[in-house]
Image (cartoon, rainbow, N blue to C red; front, top):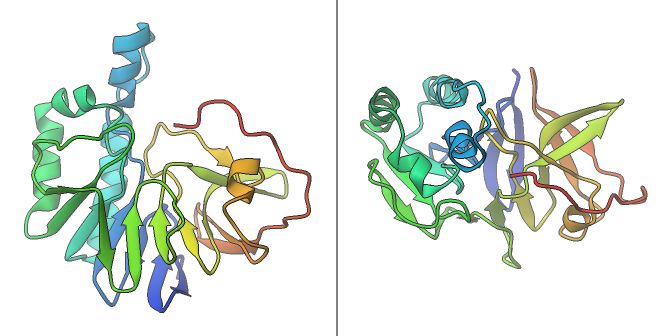
Length: 227
């Protein structure tokens, strides 16, 4: 088995190696920060051209996770699109692909800071949603049993940094799922201040691997753009 099963506030969870979170009891698959259309947004705003394959790569990964978990509900936990124009400019074949993935399932777009408004791509647009004992919203708050995204956490082990879930008894922050997303070190002050001494990082990659986060390391100043 390549995923990691754990309990968060009384809800059974499975962290997938891809960065998705599956709730088997509720048949919910959650993915965060897809940032679809990032290459398009960068081209529009800066004129810099990036290889236009990130939407295809991200949807391929999502389709693989859907086939593996067979969810009844999919939650996209904010910043699903790099901006609202990226959602409007999504190519027709990618729109059709999304429609196929949505067919027969409840699909929830959670409001993000990059995509604050509804998108005309099927599904329901919400600020947050409660599933079982958990609350799903884009940016961490003071809520207990909260699942969020936004920060794109990464954790370094043995000199290698990987996108990672971070969780303790109060909150869980998911890694970015999109192909063209950067990350923020788990040792930055902003993430350290959100978590307790009992924080666990679940590394993504070929296998989801849990490791404790040492809070006594010298923190890294938060800086740069991770989204």
